[in-house]
Image 1 (tube, rainbow, N blue to C red):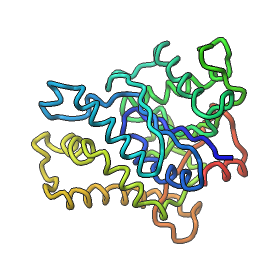
Image 2: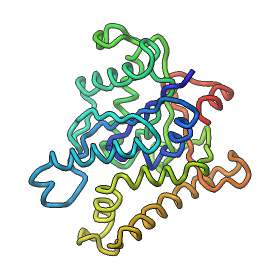
Image 3: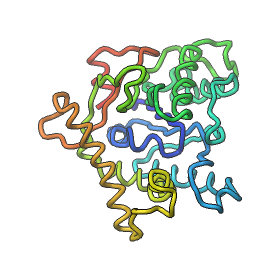
Length: 272
């Protein structure tokens, strides 16, 4: 039976860099994978055209997210909360309960939910994690959002790797070699051109016309691909003892105390 894996990020490009390789492996073995963006991505740019027409950026980012998911045959869903406006409210929590309950077999829901830890640097990220965790217990409560059938079991919730230490350092419960799918991960990331080729170089620089970023499209691709190969290589070095000998690229996960707590055998079968 295929497993159902829900990957939840605050923005349309948040999942690919952190779990894109694992998602590709899960799809390759026949699992159903869905990327969820809590926000519409309407603030992630600097161009005047998007200041004048934020909906144009929303449409562009939706198309990019769909193209990224299509690289591995994953699904994509957007909750539509305005970018920069994620808060833990009743409406948002109910929306998250419905998102979680409605993926997978009725009453079963997802087998695995992947998300960032709630001590992330970005407020949208922190509150997205908080929404998922706040919704978790309510998944099995029938009188909460009775329009969407309550679950008869809890999914496993697992955080993707980060380097933050405020609130506690990341703990790697499982590390995944993604050598076989690193180029698929790069293709998913590079599908988000508005972010990795435009907004992020601008935001990380001097806010002056992408200073220092290549103008040639091929060079741009290699620059962005290099960033993410280096990132995955650093994870592999950090958790080499947990990986097959010689693994060059990896992703890692920490099982949350919320939700179902798998034993070692179940975890190994759930995350390849």
